[in-house]
Length: 236
Image 1 (cartoon, rainbow, N blue to C red):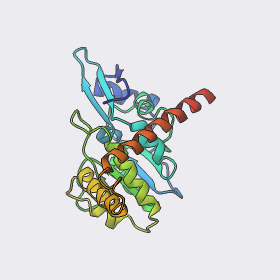
Image 2: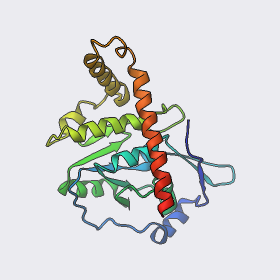
Image 3: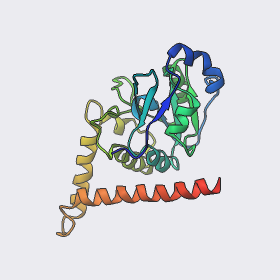
């Protein structure tokens, strides 16, 4: 169930958007990025947004459930870089995805892969993507957002990436590689369930309540974000 109303962009022609690019979304591809935190690279058009053309040539954008909570929870431990080469990108779209400005970088890249490679030179990087990159160990493959997506998918990713960060390993590659060519959500959930049952093996009251407790934790995250968002907006 979506928590946000979709927005409509009146920029409906790729040619027109390209011409307006410089004034609506300044390019930052020449900027050298170096961070003390790991950088989480996301193309929002591949993982966080769904869009379709309407009958009157507008574009209807819908945000993946809990996108804001996803960014909010990970923004403390990662520098988040929203990078895309999609010609529909503009400030309005990026502000829709990230209304509180949690992401550290918002970049339109003429050459997306080159931009990512430049960032990887000086930083510890994880790339969230909807395709399997066989020769790149920095990628975590998650399914694209569509009407069949499960409600809490992004919060599963929050759980995984938070755990990964606090493992304090020098190189994430081996862990990320273990999810290649597999359904991330199913695989990660299976591991989490096994860990939960091992920890609660002697607790008959909790042993078979993994799903319920997981949902309670996620609902608490959602509640905390809503409260924090209200406080932040009041202070502006």
